[in-house]
Image (cartoon, rainbow over all chains, first blue to last red; front, side, top):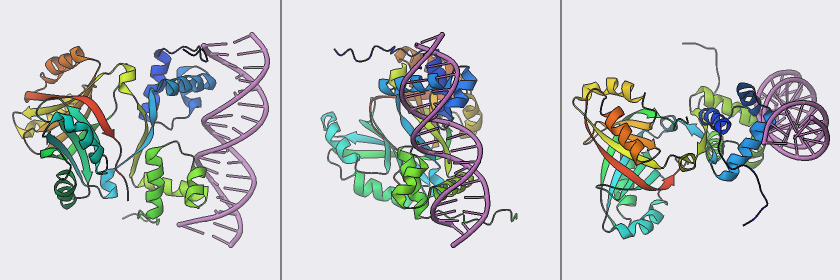
Length: 158
Length: 158
DNA sequence: GTTGAAAAGTGCTGCGA
DNA sequence: TCGCAGCACTTTTCAAC
């Protein structure tokens, strides 16, 4: 085991507060966070570095409105696999379908559960019939279309 | 109709390229984007302002690893409502449950489809039995637990 | 609409407590 | 381990093209 770093690898209350602020708005300046939490800007910097090294922070991404960019359909897919053991191979192929934005291996009726974003119903039909049905091991799928997204947020840290 | 702004409200190829870069990493400096796309930093700034005013950009959020913060369970919920007309009232109450991170009004078997993040199975049971079942209009729920999240990304702009 | 450079603000690093 | 101060970099603005 290496002794390069002897720093504190626990997450304390200050870390949680910093994360809470940045999870809502990733562009909040460190100086402003520092003022709010009554510590120095340098401290925020050190804590952020620690959280990044710990892998708690996976990145910062811009959230866009898919509809304003011409993506009108959000749908959920329950996917039946012939055998559970085909999961890894199926995922490898499904990763190539860029309309799939989220994919889980789940308990219950289906083996795979996916979220998919498309331009319109024609585009959705295309992806379902041509791309997804041709993945090896996939038996059939069930589709649920989102008519309204009422909640979209991150976990609230306490 | 107001004539305050006479600016171009179309999204062109340059806008898409800027968004593509920032959707992967929201902290990419404007100067670097400018260099990559061979325009000036000022142009990036003007385009971003336009996209924000158009509502294309909804914000920037820090992505964290829920497991490293003690949230081990991600689950999906299919919710049956007594009547579809109770949707708005139910959503109002469900918004108060902070473990729910995503909620959709969907076609198909269920009226509501939700994504939920909890500390452990006990926490999940608590939220299901105490918080969600007590929402007026909810008949019953079906739960799918995510055993593995294999894809998590944003739409690819073309 | 775009450019390039100047002004303002923020992030980063090392020294001191 | 934290805070302060100085330097480097980024964002923002603006006159000119």
